[in-house]
Amino acid sequence: MNLELSEEQAAVRNLAAVFTDREIVPFAREWDLAESVDPAIVGRLGKLGLLGLTIPEEYGGSGGDHLAYCLVLEELGRGDSAVRGIVSVSLGLVGKSVNAYGTEEQKQHWLPRLTSGEALGCFGLTEPGTGSDAANLTTRAVRDGGDWLISGSKTFITNGTHADVALLFARTGGPGHRGITAFLVETGLPGFGRRTIHGKLGLRGQATAELTLDAVRVPDSARLGDEGQGFKVAMSALAKGRMSVAAGCVGIARACLEAAVKYAGEREQFGRPIAGHQLVQDLLADIAVDVEAARLLTWKVADLVDRGLPFATESSVAKLFASEAAVRAANNALQVFGGYGFIDEYPVGKYLRDARVMTLYEGTSQIHKLLIGRSLTGVNAF
Ligand code: FAD
Image (cartoon, rainbow, N blue to C red; front, side, top):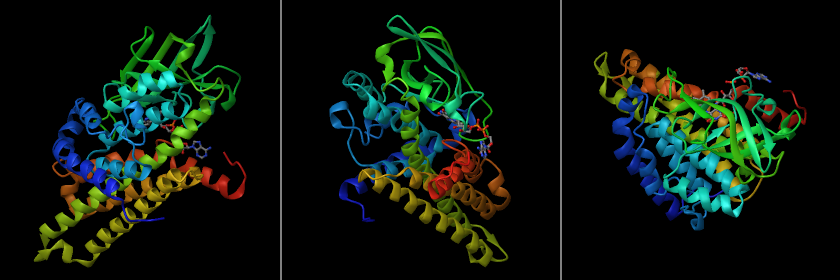
């Protein structure tokens, strides 16, 4: 693997870095306190092409490879994980699934809207009764003439409050993963309800919602992929999604490192900057190692994806390591800040709160250990 960035990759990283410093970092605290990012950020991301990376230009995308995508997510994650998540879901989980499984009509209808930021997507897999055990979901879609009627509920849905389209997974057949089908459901349809979930520990600026569907009628042309193929659509979206979470975690850990190094150079105790105390350097060094290791694991996944090689286990490895590393890095950074890390005035408390969910969503750390264990042994221990 060539670790030197191409000119295009360096340029897109620079674009995302400047955007993050100008349009995200100055507002992240305000958005966190208000429990809402500025919704106009979606249009701004679209205008820069950051919602179209890896999507072909003929559908309004900005092209680029998955390493460029990870570089962008690292920058956005450094600024605010709530913004990074908007891109990971609308482009990463929804747009890329439409590109991979959509009919020509679905691609032409949804991709230009999603990549420009004119429309926002959300991904509805989790239900109140099924989280890790997603293959047992109970939302149902039944045929009614040439249409489908979808009923059930989804919870913890990122972007759910504002999304224009939901990539929803519903049971159309028997039990287990083979009975699941994917649908692209417009959120304004009769019977589609949503409620914002407030009081989250972190990612407070991100709109997380509970969705309810009461006999929502969609045409058969809203089906994404074949009947019974929905779980495959979901799992292939999540395999890449985990790479994007990992990239976002590298961003959090890097933000922690930059904040902690700066503070350690400024804060004086015992007559010198705390950076001059060996145990503080120990904390900084641990964060730096986590940043580097998490980034390399993430880039490895991007490289495999771009070369068309299998990457699912590597994606679990990267997501598991990077999410746990982000939590460690934020905790270590908070320690460097001492009591000041515990108050809102400094960003490290937010980094820790935001990092904490990374070990939970898109597969908990336990689920990723089981996936890695299954790949090592061939034994399913779920
Ligand atoms: P559970 O599955 O109930 O797990 C509880 C605990 O049991 C965990 O520690 C888990 O690791 C452990 N556990 C479960 N099964 C096993 C096992 N077999 N072996 C060992 N341990 C096990 N979902 C979406 O579909 N779309 C979204 O956009 C989305 N966004 C989210 C945003 C936020 C902020 C949050 C908090 C969640 C989001 N989720 C989303 C849901 C997320 O993916 C789930 O929370 C996650 O999959 C875990 O499911 P659960 O919360 O039901 O936990």
